Length: 184
Image (cartoon, rainbow, N blue to C red; front, top):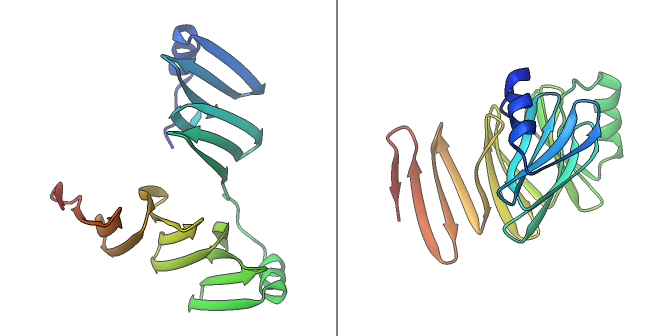
């Protein structure tokens, strides 16, 4: 997430076609028909068709005809909270000592080093520290170091930092961002 300076925020507001304040330090602005959501100086989503903010780190946006609900988890869970999640889960899969996936009521979540990386999705694959893919509504998304590498694809494979492959609409794409190479 991009962190904006106070001057950059002032310039955005000044140049915007429309600004809506949800709370102190939380606003959306529209420019050229596209909306951006800013919370505490951080851009949460940009170039969306529409954005809604509900509470700190909880928002929804619409882009290219699809709607996304986002909840950012950025706090350390206590040992008691972790044990409660495990005991309430239907299944728990441990990847390492500090990384596990849990299933509850046919929904999955992933916890790494005491932080929730994602929850309430259909399925999750953990590859390495801060690298995982998840499935929701039959489509998969690959996340590396907190950034989405590819979203809403049919299948995805991660090989190394910035090297992955995905399938979409019957075509396979191989990506190597370290060399800026994309193969179809």
